[in-house]
Length: 123
Image 1 (cartoon, rainbow, N blue to C red):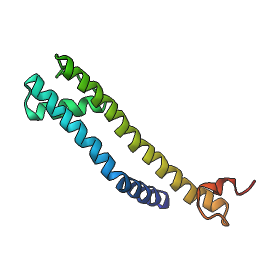
Image 2: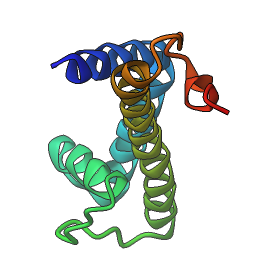
Image 3: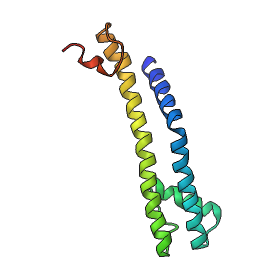
Image 4: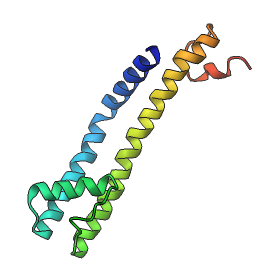
């Protein structure tokens, strides 16, 4: 239970620090999706849906762009989506590492302060 609590605390703290940047990426994905939808004459919901399906690299293919500019914006959305996903995954990895060090490394070495260098304290 302690591991989970440290993980959640670390993850939420890190995500809240990154929130303005992450929200900016989400807004960029949404806006490019709206532009693509206007170019392709799609509805608003279909445009946003296509943007996030592309950004998450799921890519069902049910709304393929046909114009050159639309295709270019879809490529941009895919890269922005990879960046967004990578940041969230890296934040999760950092939270797991922090929880592991706080629970297991801290138990093995009670003199450790639980920081990143605690694993090297036996050297």
